[in-house]
Length: 290
Image (cartoon, rainbow, N blue to C red; front, side):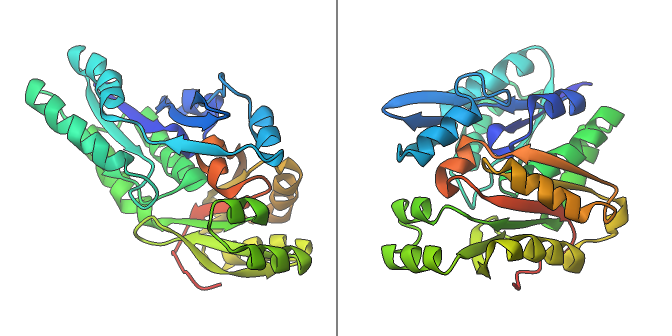
């Protein structure tokens, strides 16, 4: 290929999937106990088990966007080698990374005026970005041009439907996303936030799910309601230290789609939602009704 397809580790794709679709995943930084780590697709600096163990013990985690110099360092070797670049990563609704990338690209484009650098705001979050990259990566490995891949991503990015149910109300409370009173009553009544992503890429609280058994019913019902041609789709199931829940959800949608893939939610998103989150991602209509 005469261009490189790139994203960042907020996509929560495994190293195996990244290799399968030939996408390069740029690491993103998180900090725990005053020590900084880069989260790579293979979690080489801190395993996800260790990350969630620390999180559940009350250790805070803070994330950092990819900075200007890192984008220069990631992109420039490929430009020097005569390659073009297409990058789409964490959306503007969650991070300033995209705007920082644009600044780096502006300067790189002046230096490498004969090269093409395409930057796309994904309008997707976490495993939703992962699904976007997975689908685009299949096109990339088929040999489409950079212009064709850019068009394909822009055509489908707002069709990626995100449905998350958050388990860790204490973590949301610590992050200031819900009050202590809401967290206390939510735990007592087994009420969990139902979260989606709007067309600006922002996480929005759409509704509430009460009781553990209704978690699966809610996610499956949204898939049934909003998915386009579900029998032909690859569906992503994301989980934050909740493999048992992910397997149960996978079992419940078996036969409803062509294929389902379970993805671990890493520190970039896990830092903000805590452990236990469960998500279903698919192509369809972004219907933000609970």
